[in-house]
Length: 457
Ligand SMILES: Cc1cc2nc3c(=O)[nH]c(=O)nc-3n(C[C@H](O)[C@H](O)[C@H](O)COP(=O)(O)OP(=O)(O)OC[C@H]3O[C@@H](n4cnc5c(N)ncnc54)[C@H](O)[C@@H]3O)c2cc1C
Ligand SMILES: NC(=O)c1ccc[n+]([C@@H]2O[C@H](COP(=O)([O-])OP(=O)(O)OC[C@H]3O[C@@H](n4cnc5c(N)ncnc54)[C@H](O)[C@@H]3O)[C@@H](O)[C@H]2O)c1
Image 1 (spheres, rainbow, N blue to C red):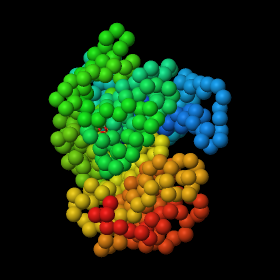
Image 2: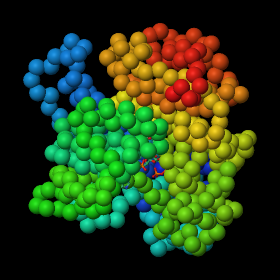
Image 3: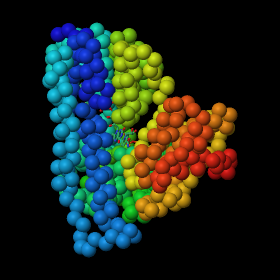
Image 4: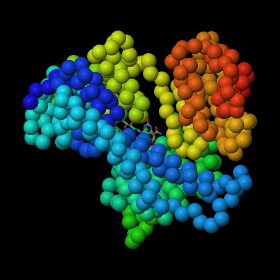
């Protein structure tokens, strides 16, 4: 069977690209080996944020006496009902995608696992399909550390299938996945222990943010064990035992359930890429240029599998870049993208561009605007004063280098900074803007009136 283009994977870039190619007259096939919608829709952003919302309601129900709200009696957490709500949101999204494909006569959906036979052909379920161009959007999967293969562990996929709340959830990994699930299950009623081999939570953030999050988690009753390399696990009756190597000693921690949140690996090593000109880097990510083209002139790689981002918005932006080269002004490129993301813990941590460590490493002369949430009127009114805001400005250009916000609503007002960075305007534009009272955002101009040298941080 011959197509103009074949897309492998229905994650966050593939479906939009299929629709655009089809709209512009191409005959397209899109191959999917699992559920339509990929990680984000089925086992990533969508289900976890639905659970985060339930967990926050539970927390508020149990912890509002400081605002004069007392709930007498038990707050019951019904994980089965929480899961049913999540399943409905996920299946609505998945079904929406199914109908996009079935209603488009230029798109064939092929169910099965694709493997390249050459630069111009793939095999799916024993059948060969040829195309002029290929777009790889195969995503990533959980990394299972050595020593854990033979134990009954959970991943971000299986934990979302539980219908009863774990008594004691041990989590290996203090990154986004570990923290989001950790706080959520603690709020559902599990005892939670988060273990990381590093010396702080969220290793990509400045240490003060890792520390602040650790404090917030510990205040909620979550156990955080740092400098703890988890080397193996075994089952002893109903109990799971994880062996930890820390400071020359071996310890054991026991719990009822074990979640592995120890990073993700790209789905690139069983794709038959050895039959093509596509190359992988030393971490098995597909190597691409600024327009996401691989070393094969007719094959592009988008989303998590190219290692240029690990988020839904970066995968979708990859689609926008490729699409601009196909049907637009051909001007969009990877190197124009600023790193930005949020960890959807409560309060959320949101980040754009450089942090203090990055700036120091790059030797850039910079100033900082900062404010603790405890000095923000709206946060006080809401009773949510945990966290702090930092914005970094390059001294010479007056451009914003980056910001890290930890605080209520941070995942929304970080966009004030993101947009300003894309607008390539000096920080003085925000400094002189009038923001609405009472919001957290209204303090951003005030913060920028008080820049300090980095050394005073
Ligand atoms: C628990 C969790 C929470 C997350 N939360 C967020 C969040 O809040 N915000 C955010 O921005 N990001 C979040 N992410 C990350 C986000 O889900 C991913 O970055 C995003 O889904 C990547 O999209 P993608 O298109 O690259 O690949 P994916 O969405 O992973 O899609 C790849 C698809 O390709 C298919 N596939 C793979 N190999 C083949 C093959 N050989 N043949 C056919 N099909 C194949 C897979 O089955 C899959 O459907 C989260 C991730 C996890 C795990
Ligand atoms: N809010 C979001 O946008 C969001 C949410 C969840 C996941 N994600 C995506 O998923 C990706 C993966 O997330 P993740 O949290 O699994 O990975 P991560 O790389 O962010 O964190 C993994 C952590 O596990 C630790 N670790 C690994 N092996 C260990 C061991 N044997 N013992 C102790 N600690 C160990 C590492 O030190 C690291 O801190 C992220 O890069 C992110 O892009 C995004």
